[in-house]
Amino acid sequence: MTAEQAPSIDPLSLPPLRRHADNPLHVFLVFLRLGLTSFGGPIAHLGYFRTEFVERRRWLDEAAYARLVALCQLLPGPASSQVGIALGLMRCGYPGAVAAWLGFTAPSAIVLILFGMLVAKSGWVLHLEWLHGLLVAAVAVVAQALWAMGRSLCPDARRATVAVAGACAALAMPGVVGQILVIAGGAIAGILIAGPAMPLVDRRVSGSNPTAATGMSRRSGLLLLTLLAALLAGLPVLAQVTAWYPIALFDEFFRTGSLVFGGGHVVLPLLQASVVPRGWLSNELFLAGYGLTQAVPGPLFTFAAYLGSASSQTPNGWIGGIVAVFAIFLPSFLVVCGALPFVEVWNSHPKAGKALAGINAAVVGLLLAAFYNPIWTSAIASAFDFGLAAAAFVLLVFWKCPPWLVVMLAALASALFRLAGFH
Image (cartoon, rainbow, N blue to C red; front, side):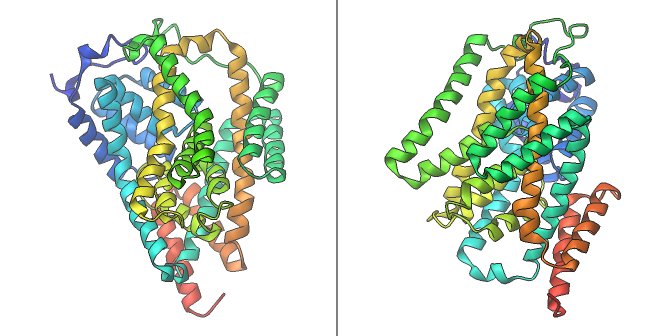
């Protein structure tokens, strides 16, 4: 029986992996095609995954896929990439997880590393007329993310209030520490004011131990989560003691990948606070790279590849890009593989679900703060910029145009406007 003909599989009631082993090369090729064609950001990626793995290949059924997506959205990191890692893990263990991540991530990471090296080595790139269009496009893309996340994660007055309070706090306390405090405050507010949490596992459907989903024990999961905590605690100390740039680079991106709830666009404020104040990259180059990231397929976290390769501290750009992209995704491996054996524990602690509701609202607040500064303040300098951003937003939200097309149109419009002598 081929992988395409495999029966439906519930990831929360899988028998051990060895009975459903697949070829890692096959997993890699499947995800490589997705990595080359999956435009549109995290929500679109989950739609592509559903079409590929539920409808076409039947690796799992609809209910199982929905619960897997729910689990990955509860965890810090990029949800779509984590779903891919989990699917690869279920097919053929750790080699499958690596193969799935590599296939989905490599295409966009390579493009962004090359662009980052071009930016770092060629100062003339900064003066290209289309570059400002990327900044304006970033305004529209983040506004779209705010629109969607606000409607889903802040559907009532209480959570909307948490989001706005979080945005104000993030603007008052810029930097990573302030963002961590906002997330912690959101968790506390969620426990105090959020409504009841829905359980992740529907026992009427699965009714089994989710440990079987990967053949992993809770002991192995605990070891992986302990390793994550040890790296979070130890890397800053090692970076301080050695004063070696590669360690500092790895530390910054690893910590960002560990602390981002909501994934995708929410990584923007954490990365901006990590690289711009240190002088590794100017704010203009940071936002230009973020705009370009919208025009390539694959996960938005590959923005790290651009930042690592374009950093002024990186002697060999491609090495910095690889270090950064590996560091920002490593927590996803550790947290997904470590959390799967503990899914049922979530059901027995309803306050955890309330805390998550508050965290999600705080995440919207962080994105709202980033939308104002640095995105809006850096990109909107004229009435034309405002009109271009508004037009791009309408194309994204109401005309459902793909982000890569909107980014290209914004860059072209900006270039024509400036070449015509307007400013």
